[in-house]
Length: 328
Image (tube, rainbow, N blue to C red):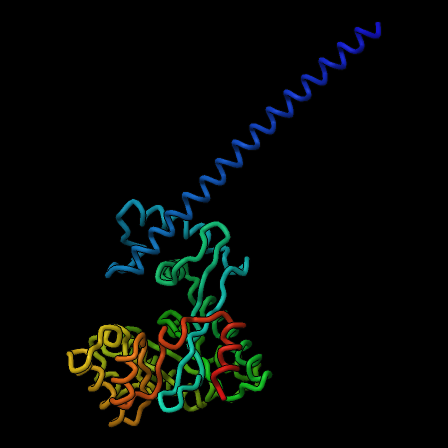
């Protein structure tokens, strides 16, 4: 009877072990499938980021054709809609350096998206999708609020003269919320309006010049600075300067990065700086990367540098320390 009991117990033990091993095998297979799926999805996004960032390819979600682009778009769309609720966006700050002193005077706030499954997604990839999904307005509002909060924190640390620049999209202007959003943030932070800059592109205002010009004049009357980003790449740069209340011209990095002494890019940069002087505007050179560019821009009378020669875009804590080290 005892032997029978032992046999029964052994039978159950064997079955239990076999069942546990089977369950473990199934779990392992499922885990491997999930891991491979995540790895493959991340690989697709990485490949697509590379295509967008390292070529003349312009990402248009409505007209994607390649297999990689179609798959990437589907993956991104499914994740982007929940990214804000999951706090996957964050800001980095690229310092702007005064030419005369070499000290930091402020920064441009740039949005980044870090998804736990997809990794770091390029802004050139997800911004067009955010526009397609109608998320660009709430995303733009989040950028303005977050940049304002961070600037307030810097001022609390004694960095009271720093400025922050935010990029504003056509969709935000068309929604009519830009002025009220900035007013709300200025009031919330209790900071001088002169410390906030709005960056616009030439293409932004082409379709609705009168409306956007009026909104920009309202912002300027408050003290907010207006910067024309990527200057020199649009089709109507000079005509727009007649109507827009611009304070700052940002020379597009395509002219600066390849610039050598006395070449065509040098001539274009010198012309833009001279034009800004005639119009009593400040000039920021983007994409500054080497000593030759720094020397040429200094000789031509550029006001501010921005680029990897001085600093890559920095997370808030790194940017704060950079300012502490380079502002006095």
